[in-house]
Length: 539
Image (cartoon, rainbow, N blue to C red; front, side):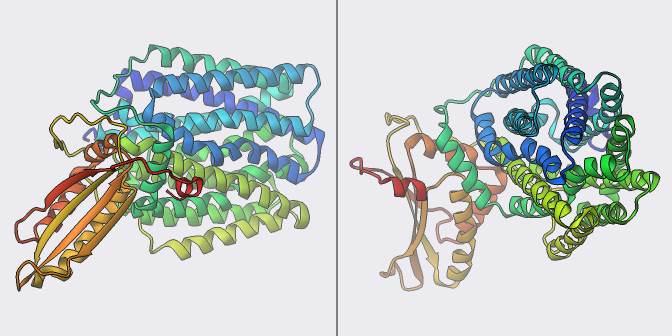
């Protein structure tokens, strides 16, 4: 078995192994805390809505902060960012332990503190996931992502069971305290990581510009949009299981803290069981068949939760749901990582996690409301039906990156000789003139549609293509392409962002011209024109 197909290959990398073990220990602490939060909320209230709002509180920050977190992770040292977010979560968990020990916890405070922990998680997640390619070769990225998911789900299997024992024996305070301690190992390993800085002769990218470029890239990258749409639909309906399972276990099945923890652990156990067979299943049947099969299995598990009131069948259904959750989301996560180049990877993951967090937070609140108004059986059955409906509606939108490898390596082209222009000067207008034979006109216009997507996706503020009414020759026509960059430094960055695949598409358009290449000019704004706040927002 080659390293590319070996699911354990990344573990031979000592740094990846150390970070993986430390993260798994920290995730065990997180799940111990989750049991403590939900058990404590179950003691304070019987409301399914308040219970589900813990899930909303912990995931809502992903909606607001994952995209900024991704932009920050792309322009600063990811190791330093990870150290900061881990320290923040340590402090919040320690504060929860203190408040619990002083018996000051209320439902509102519990939801608020889970939201503060979610802030750290939202800023941490894009940088953490984007670090996988920093630790392993490209052909091991799917295995690295799967192992990260495996570690998370081993924690999900062990953590809740351990959390149930701790909460039952010592109370929720100790669950919060152990979570605080679990972050220490991650901090120690991250401090020992000597991450190689990315060297570039370009000026540092600014946060606001990085955000705009990340959103613009997502808007013009269809393969990424497909993943976002399909994953958001799956999480909105699938997240019901995490929002309503505590109410089902504590108030419908009448389980104690240990049995509740074991029931939560069944989800993680199912995910672990799927992890090591996932690469072989994906290779044999393809990503899209896998997504359809495991989404259907997950919906079947939700139907069992809706209509069965016995612990053993519920536990088996949760094992199946755990397998489906890991298989589907690991496939989407890998698809994101393989669909975008390195310069925008953390921002793309930030958008993905934003969609994930928004779907999870809104789904938890919505299905909690449904469960409180019409009962848990209606909520679980409605979620299963909705999941199958979304699957049927999006089945034609296929995930490409896992079975059609894309060459997203940078195209190493020196775009310009050294200039005396300051990187902040601009805007810069790039003008390209093409002479196109009349018989190739339609093909050229079609090819330039892809060129437009590439220019805007890589940072152009505006783009246009015009045909000159005066023909240069009887059998030819002249086209003028122009695109605007916000500054000289941003224009240089666009050259560095171009991938091998991008250059192939651009050369295909150039090949349709009479000369095989355009005449290129660069123009700089003659004066600074005031820009209104509305124009800045629209840009």
